[in-house]
Image (tube, rainbow, N blue to C red; front, side):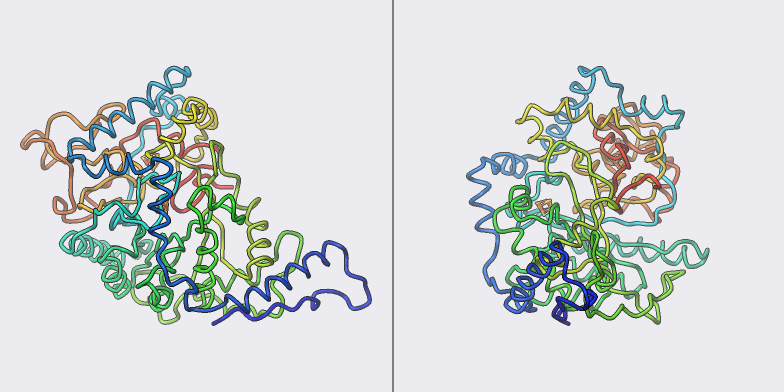
Length: 485
Ligand code: SF4
Ligand code: SF4
């Protein structure tokens, strides 16, 4: 469904001359309407892939060096790289006179982080991406080839099925399957996972980079997502072209807008049209969306499907903290609506964690210490309660289990068996499984080592200096701010 053309005057009292600000808006809407007439199409106007441009930019910026090093490294070599990265961060923190993360928790009277009931299963289904963003904590690019196997995906679905049955039996909160990558849609397991999980009545999130919708072979992606009522959480770190292209690659903004239009055209983001912009009205001439279906109380397929939800994600373009979404969302809505004729439901504002490519950028810019100090000095104990590592199980493409996606990239796996751990900040507390402790060599836990996600409850979370990124300011996690208010 294409967005209806915007009326330029319906919100203005006929007896008044338009205010200059409104005249300006009218001009912009006129431009947007003309652009929409040209661009609003479910068929990408660009039939070519972004990948050749991404590879050229990686080569020009020397970015492919680390990518190739990661790719060539053995499993042990990757763990060593991650250990070195973590040790360098701890040294920066110490030389700035700042305490380890666990000490900050203790000083605030908080116990070490432990895992609660898992309500989100987050799968990193593969590291391949058509982009190579400067802040990427996953070090993704078109050069990465790692991808989840059918065997691992099936095992994850089995764990999801058992968890869904348990939550239905106890009438506890419904489960979410959160698919990430890389560009998760490029993984061969993406669509089978979506089909199977939605058939169970589980809510599915697609962490989408938007440009993937314009890739050859993905022409039906928007309608596939809509058909399965997948919630789309899409990265768009700014509403301005130059900022987005600087962080995510040349041409990414234009393709992202194209991707947003494709999602709007199949019904995503409809609730956004009823929301006013910064100091202005709701979109003109747009009927409010039908009343929302009541949220599902369990994982059974819902008779009245929920609206197609499209949320955008902002992350800072440099070494500073994310603002609150309430302060930024109106400006996003105004710019995207008036200049590009696109709508979204809500904006999530996340901090950049000093991990992988963003950590490299900080290092090259000489800003590592400054940024870690910013994060540590903004430590907010209230943000610790909602940390995603408490209720999310993160599974890597190879089936290893982690407390979160960041720990995944830093080779901080949950472990099984006896012996030493892979270099957490302060020991491993209760992380060894009771079944394996002491009787087998210590190794990373995989989805094949557990029968049920509930086995992970109560385990200590592995923390290190990067965790300050999640507790700074309003807090930050995959679902947005972690501190109430
Ligand atoms: S940040 Fe997202 S879109 Fe950018 S390279 Fe990483 S995975 Fe791809
Ligand atoms: S990085 Fe954040 S989510 Fe991950 S373990 Fe640390 S505090 Fe928890």
